[in-house]
Length: 131
Image 1 (spheres, rainbow, N blue to C red):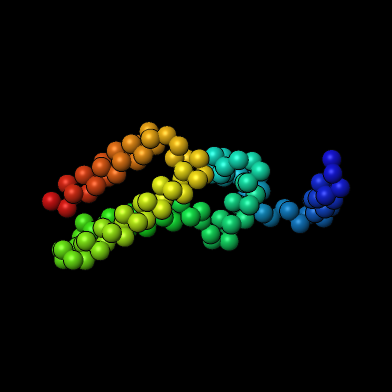
Image 2 (image 1 turned 180 degrees about the horizontal axis):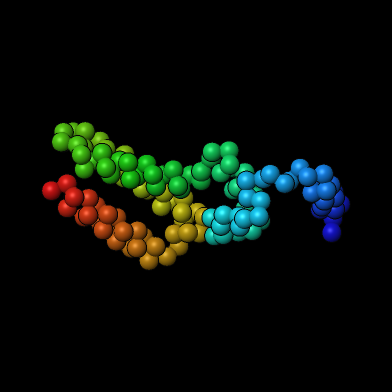
């Protein structure tokens, strides 16, 4: 056990003895499941710190932006605006694919086939809801 681990353990034991940890939100309860299980262990702390600070990975924000643009295109009635939104959507999707490939998440075409199937299912159900 390293010196920092020992210091941390001593501080925790000291806090337990003094009662500082008695009124914590999850005292006596299970902690919520960590949703970072898919992140490599050596990166989890960094991701957790970024998440707690309100930052999300670029691929997540790009995916949200693609969904937003798709919704705007569906709702848009002006062909000029629709073409501009489609251009922006294509750029975002291209950037997302490049980013996923850089990170090794898009190495297989199956990933993109699956993504397209989900998008088709979602947009098909939205169109049915709008009709």
